Image 1: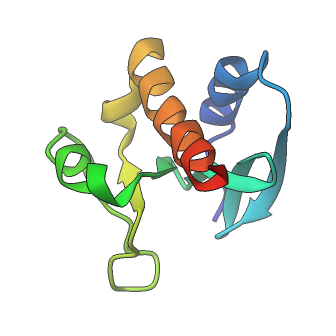
Image 2: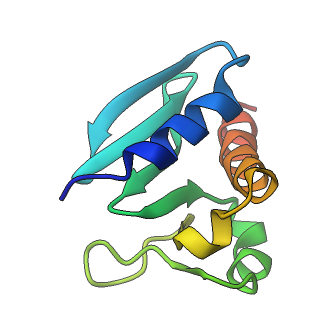
Image 3: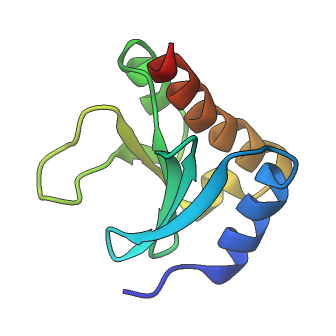
Length: 108
């Protein structure tokens, strides 16, 4: 499944000033890695974001957000955000930075 190249360009703009960012083909889409760990990505037209377990309930209360169910059952610590949920640059930035925060927290 091809991923949304326009969304990829928008994510690159959010992350452009941050060091230690790389990209990798993953999940049939594109993953953005921070310090070697996935922080977010794109599957089809959806943004995929890593979210701290303690923040999952509040993340899922946002419109256009659902658990990542790539395998047919929800994966812990991942959410999908539909295109409507990242329609503005500010909303996209907030979600991408949640993924960056996840990696920072894991790195300790």
